[in-house]
Image 1: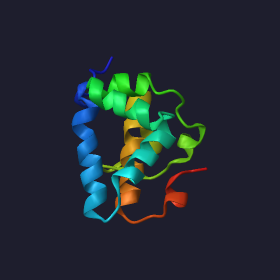
Image 2: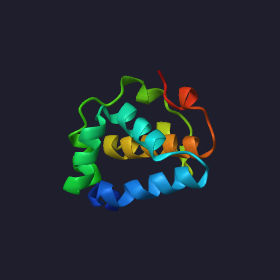
Image 3: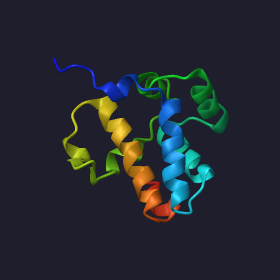
Image 4: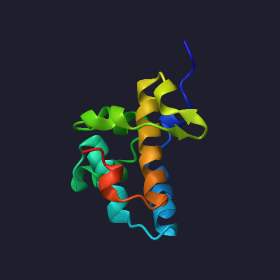
Amino acid sequence: MTPEHRIFAMKFANIYPAYVHKAERKNRTKEEVDQIICWLTGYDQAGLQQQIEQGNDFETFFAQAPAFHPNSSLIKGSVCGVRLEEIENPLMKKIRYLDKLIDELAKGKAMEKILWQ
């Protein structure tokens, strides 16, 4: 059995500002970041805010997600040099899906193209 990845225990609230900062550096907004997170996880704005305030780690954040988007499996590509399709750990895959969507936002992609409706 492989050891738990360090990121699983990291607080979502500690990483969230980095997502927002990455987007804002590219003239995107916190609202767009929140929209992506809510689309992927099923959280509403209040639920997302509650997760941040509670200081939950990534494992808890994703475990408590109301409805992980059924189209998330359509997200393809690489994050940090790793192909999403090759990630076996389900939690790591969810984290990397989120990373990929934020990357696409920062690259200037239109929201309609980022969110696999």
